[in-house]
Length: 150
Image (tube, rainbow, N blue to C red; front, top):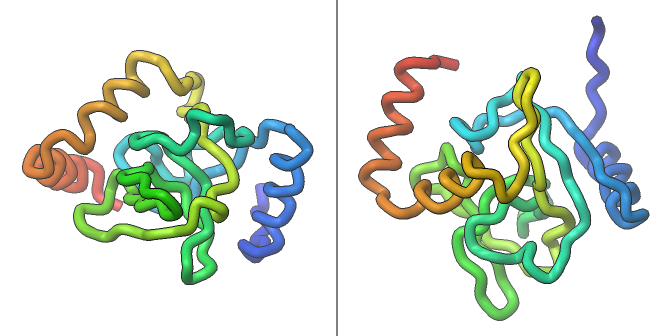
């Protein structure tokens, strides 16, 4: 099967149109920044429109950074007008964006034949534990990357 490469601005423009029309959108994952929870080229994510609880620490969102780059990362910090984001696979890199540049929330991850829903035991365990201990996070990522080299 051939793949079609669509520029991000066109791709995400269409995704945002669907989200704004109150549709749920399922897209493939491309980057490594959300490893190990979300894997590129094998997993897909489900995006839904935002609700009153979407902009909370630990949730995964689709955002546009100040550098005009679309990313899907976990919320690390919520301030009055800005959100700090970090990919699960990033040890130190963080992105900051305006609250108005958060467009959708990830509500499920599709892994081969299973769907991990937001609010499930595995989802909540990842959300709760991932930021709790930076040292363990570093060790786990090192082990993961040695076990599953890219």
